[in-house]
Image (cartoon, rainbow, N blue to C red; front, side):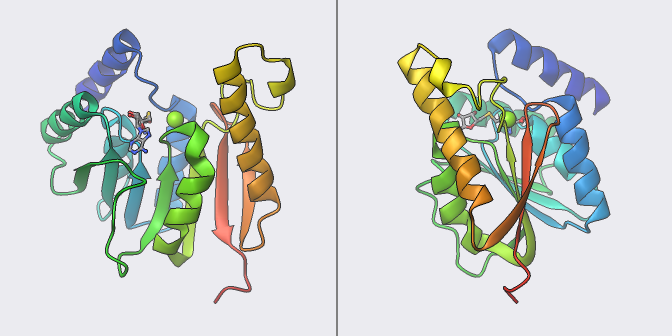
Length: 199
Ligand code: SAH
Ligand code: MG
């Protein structure tokens, strides 16, 4: 398993797959242990790196992870099998905006790590699949240090993407349903929970 993780890290580097930073996944694994998390929904599997580490952070946790890119999905399936985690990880090959989960499925943790420009849409769609006491964690809210500096970015595509992440942060800060903490770990993480009023 350790060897497989190292292999996945080199594969990601070679093929330019944006897997989570070590400090960030360590934070999430600890969060899963400390908060009795038993079910995780991940948006954006890539090659399964974060899903595999989340699934191995507790004996009794299961992970459903969604990926829309076929090559990555196949690679993810292969890695999950190689780690012997196919009973704990369910990999779904679909666009997360098009997935129809059964309404009575609820998760302890939703990890948003798919298309950065769509974070708000993912949040609004998937909050209904979060348990009352559940948590939504989002990765890359610093986006390589660009977030907060969009005005100075010249490339149109990058600027628009960074602006969307900046909007997402404002959306979380002003949110009437969720309280969010922001962590300067790795590429930036946000941790959102339903406000106390919702019971
Ligand atoms: N969580 C992974 C990294 C994910 S990278 C890890 O840390 O190991 C982001 C992935 O999200 C990419 O593989 C991309 O193909 C996928 N993605 C982007 N938008 C998506 C969408 N709408 N639905 C499903 N997957 C998506
Ligand atoms: Mg990420």
